[in-house]
Length: 369
Ligand code: PLP
Image (cartoon, protein in one colour):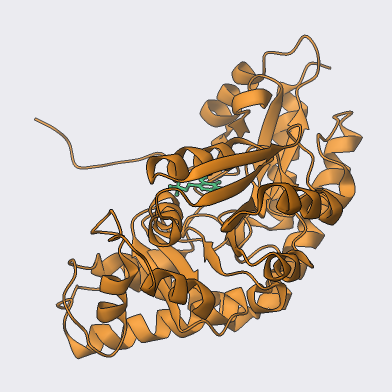
C-alpha cells in the first residue's frame, strides 16, 4: 500500500524552482471552476494586466502558457520562425544553446555568436553581429541561469529596428527580481516562468509579443508547426472571442494570479530593490567565507549567483550535505561550468536576509576549515 504524500520541507536556494509563497499555495487550493466560466475569464484578464505591469509592457498579446518556461520559450520561436529565416542567437550559456536547438527544429537558418560562460555581449559586438548576419530575429538571454550573468538590453531594441529584425528575450530568471522594461528596450518577444521570481510552483509561463511580432505572425507563408503553441489560436481564447483551444490548468492560473498580485502589492521597483539588497548581502557573506564569485560584479544577477568551487572540494558532496542535513537546496554547474560552480538562487519571496544567514551558517559548518 502506498502512503499519502509526505514531502520534506526544503529551503530552495538553487536555480529554481524557488519556494512558493504560502498565499500562492492557498490560492492553488481554491476549487476549480470551468475553463469557460466568466469568473475564470476574469482571472485570465487579471493575469494579463498584472503581467503587463511586472514586465513593463503594453503588449496586448500578453498571456500565460500552460506549461513550464520551456513551453513559452518554444512558443516564441514557433510563432515567428519560418523555415529559412535567419535567427541569430547570442549564446552566453546553456539556455542560449537551447534556443539554438529549438530554432533549428523549426527550420531556421541558425547563426550564433558566443561568449565564454559568465560574460555578456556589448552593444558594439551585437551591432557587428547584426551587420554580418542580417537576421530576421535576434535572440538573447537576459538572465543566463547557467552562469549568473545579466545581459544588458538597453539600446538593443533600437539596434534591431535599425537592422529590421525582431528582438526575442528570455526573462525566465529575471522577471520579478531584475529590472525589465520590455517596451522601453524595444523587446518584441519575451517569455518567463512561474517558479522563480514569481514564487509560484512551475506550470504557468508568461509570454508576450509586440505588435511588430504579431504582424510577422499574421504574414507567415506557412502554418505555425505546433498547434498547442499557436498564438493566433491562443489569442482567441485569451482575447474577447473566448474560443476553446485547450483546457486551461485552472488552479495553476489561480496560483499565478496570486503570485502576481503579491508582486504588484509590494510594487515591482521595491521587489527589484529588495533582490539587489539581499544579493549584495549574500555576496559579502560568501566573500567573507573566502569564496570567489564567478561573474564580474557589474553583470551579476540579483536572482542567481555562481560561486566557484574551491580546489580540492567535492562540490556535489557539499550540496548533498546541505540538502540532507540542513534542508537547503543549492544548484551545481551546468555545461561548461559543470563541477566548477555552485548556483545560489535568491528569487522572489525567498530573497530575504534570514535565508542568506541560514545558508551561510550551514556553509560555515560544511566547508573545510
Ligand atoms: N530559460 C532559462 C534562462 C531558464 O533558467 C530555464 C529554466 O531554468 C528555462 C529557460 C526553461 O524553463 P523550464 O525549466 O521552466 O521549462
